[in-house]
Length: 103
Image (cartoon, rainbow, N blue to C red; front, side, top):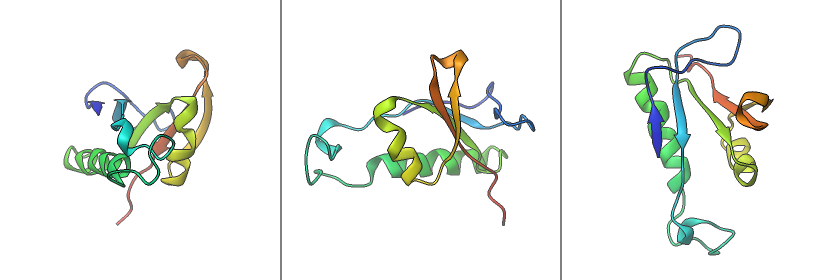
């Protein structure tokens, strides 16, 4: 996983600071499409939760944003990330974001 922690802001009108996931990938033997059942399960979800925890540590309230490759959109939907549609600045990739964690 490759994270950017300083320069990105939410694409929502509030423009809050967030962790931006530049890239997230798991090994092929952990992808259900290639290996069923996967050798290890939950690796991608664990990485997302780690990014969310890091966002909390930095004072960003758990906000995490990313643009999903077409084959991974379902994964982010299943992990309850809000979907905000295609982004013309990112070749039409769909933007997903975890919002503020309310305590």
